[in-house]
Image (cartoon, rainbow, N blue to C red; front, side, top):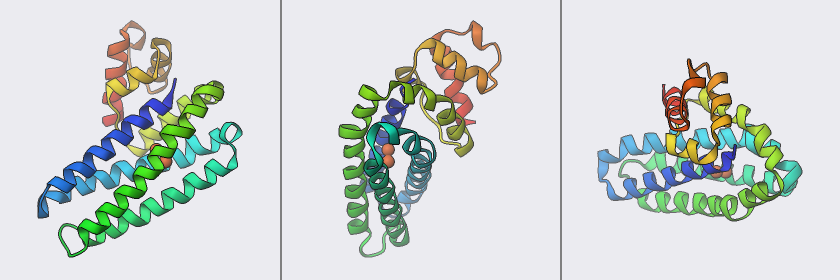
Amino acid sequence: MDVTKILEADHRKVEDLFDKIEKADGDARTPLINELKTSLLGHMELEETVVYPAMEPVTGKEDVVEGNVEHDLGRKGLEQMIGLAPDEPGFGAALDACKAGIKHHVDEEEDDIFPKLRKDGREVLDQMATPFMTKRLELGLPMTADALSAASNKDELLEEARSAGIESASAMTKDDLAKALAAKMAS
Ligand SMILES: [Fe+2]
Ligand SMILES: [Fe+2]
């Protein structure tokens, strides 16, 4: 299983939420900001507890330290933005700064760290799969069936479905396994 594909789907969701917040006015921003906060904090915790520690032998320590520092900066930016939400003066500037910081970090993961893991860390990625799914379930961090399907082959989905306690998993198609796991993650 290539969990980086799922992390990339999380990144797209966060970008989409930033866009929606920019387009929304006043109180209409509040539910979007709440969703952004849950998605972003959960994603960062998942990377910090499961992905970053496991990737260190492949990427080196510097990438891990840098990732953690950028997450801290991201959390500070988010806090500042939330403090000015939904429409205190300066909210737009805080949103721009938070979004730019996250973009820089996401580009680094997608252009440098994830390709390194795919090239030299297949084994690390495979070992990460079950702890990754377990932590995601614990965090209540949903994912789409499409992202799951793109990240996994059928056997991998079957293994994760079994360990998540999904009944009759062995009789399911790949698509059904992805849907059942996605539904489990969202419940
Ligand atoms: Fe990420
Ligand atoms: Fe990250």
